[in-house]
Image (tube, rainbow, N blue to C red; front, side, top):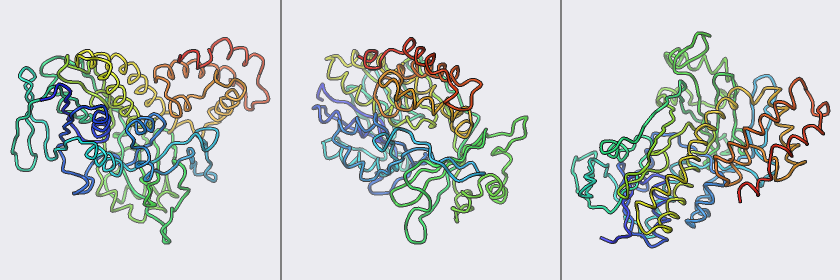
Length: 457
């Protein structure tokens, strides 16, 4: 067995991308996947099928020469199209123009593209092979076919866990060494539905936007697909609280679900002729944040992506963060002759940034469901854009730092906290920008914020 050989557990998005990156750097790569080959059997994920691809993810795809193939399946989203129910939908742009957008991509399409590229690069793919047991001392792993029960024993130099939030490799590592695992389950779940194409085969609503129906403690969103459909996701508390608001445990059947949508999201319901069938077929999903104190077991195993730091989906950064992990791990393996040193350096580099985006993802849920139609928020957003124009490179909007740039998430979070305080103080008691104390605001920006290029250098 070559000294430059890695065995990747999980051939989903992160595993397949890592396989491409490592093969291009001369590594021997084996990918083991519990499910069947989606290129032959079709996608059978069970997870949210739409993903938001941002600059961080596209940078990783470019590093793997995969960007062009992936972007054939992507739909541009310029911003949030907010449906408040009492007015025409309005677009809140993510950035300044069409150079600052995100992209909706179908998880299954993306996985198929990356698997094809991984195989073409020389990675060996093994499907119907779930990790069953690991002997870390002997460096042998056992993989089991979930259908037949047949097993195979596989020697390894090092294992990489790219097998998601329910990682089998993480569980095996935990039995050898305490990883400090903590899981915070969100009290909200999700249900997926679908808006089909129109009668003429086009989109039923504006395709170049993430549609959002904010309702305070809950919301619906809809992301476009390249087959002219939208994936609709309802986020709702699992259980009714003291305020008696709607919750999944109060919606006992399809009739109750349809009545709920007719009351709260009538325009969305009108777009979903198969609402009843989809509600009955799709289960309520769980949302949680996974924290670990340790991601690696010396040079024998390391975790990345959701296996190391699963997060709630409300900033659209889970996949982008995982793709950044892949590039960082490949770089550290190039920089260190010893795998243990590479894994330790990777963890030290990425753990602070993973923690930062996990917090920001939770914060963004509150913004999406509760603030996008709030007058104070809208004024602060106006001021944010105005300060970006007045202080280019010094005052950079939160969304731009996270989504259109590749500065570390932890740095973006620190600057966001400073900028939010500036925005809140400046707009307190005001309803319009022309009433603000601009000299004082400019002075505070210069005093609080160093030019971003100086900080990131």
